[in-house]
Figure 1 (tube, rainbow, N blue to C red):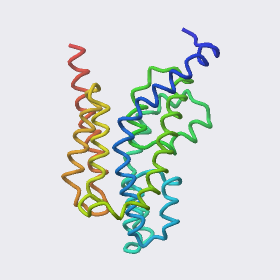
Figure 2 (cartoon, helix red, strand yellow; figure 1 turned 135 degrees about the vertical axis):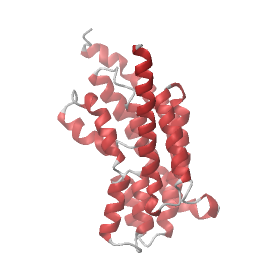
Figure 3 (cartoon, one colour; figure 1 turned 180 degrees about the horizontal axis):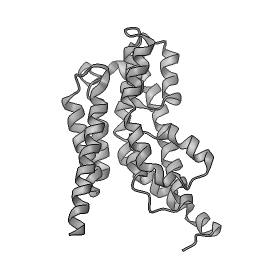
Figure 4 (cartoon, rainbow, N blue to C red; figure 1 turned 90 degrees about the horizontal axis):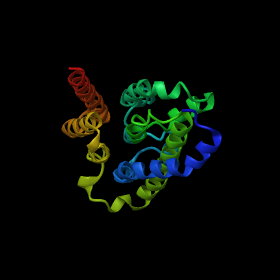
Length: 238
């Protein structure tokens, strides 16, 4: 069925509301992570204004945390390497979303990856049934909203972070974020498995250097989800 411009315009408010409603359960757990980033900035050897700029410019919590905590104790190349390793999971995200992006205009294919973080992928990956226009509207609405939330809580973390108990500060925020993905994905078995396994593995590997537990959790979670999805597909074809 062909979707006309008028039909698409009529559905725009519905798509926006759905995107924001879906974002809420995954954005809430990102709030403590943002406070952690803000706190880490205040304790880092990195100048505060440079640390603050990582929120709008980098917009990747795990990579920001690595940059901020390694500043002053590692070389620039070591920091770059750590950030690249942590962000390798984005290659898997991009591959998974490629079919949806092939139908998007060039500007969208260039701009949208900047906003592709874990929460955005968790939501966008299950929107392949939408038309290209609706997918674009959904993606941009929830991704930009998350960017605004992140760039609000990080500065707040810089202001009020010092009152947070020491035990809550750096190590356990990523598993909290994975827990939020679990809450969203309870009715999507492979995604739920990815969130649960990713959160558990990242918690178990929290002591690895350079926050590598985050990328280990993400990779293992994606592999677990792929195995579950393949098993479900095999069962469906019997």
